[in-house]
Length: 184
Image 1 (spheres, rainbow, N blue to C red):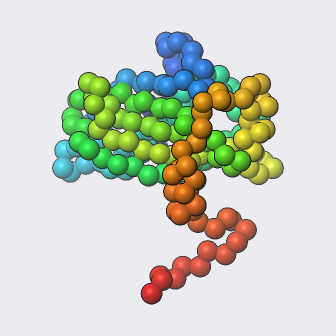
Image 2 (tube, rainbow, N blue to C red; image 1 turned 30 degrees about the horizontal axis):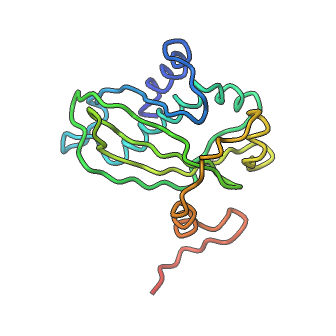
């Protein structure tokens, strides 16, 4: 909820004020660090980076037209895995951009790489696995390609390490037990 106003502003203005994008292009969303993004150390809180990156994914989906298609079909995006690495802190009032790119698909997920960039330098980088859900359950990548009316570019190949990462950090599916017990 803490980014509700920025999210609403983005939803209302992304298509009108910024050029359209292809779903497989890179979105670059210019931003500025606001006081509400800061923690007690006076830099952007680690959890805030991931919340701000939501805006970058929204920007790509809206400007590519995928947002409208997704809403028409009753699909909703959810995150299934994410990991982030930090290099430098974003500080009060600093200008930066959120760079967002789809880096691949598998049968269950769409994978994004997102970066916080200041003057051409990466401050933070994240990899995010997302899924589309409908009232009938998960939406397959094949259903997404069919709805979009095209396949991803042939050179869009999911890096092998991403599949390993996903397998190593995944929790059991919701229909399988996931008991809370620390391993010895």
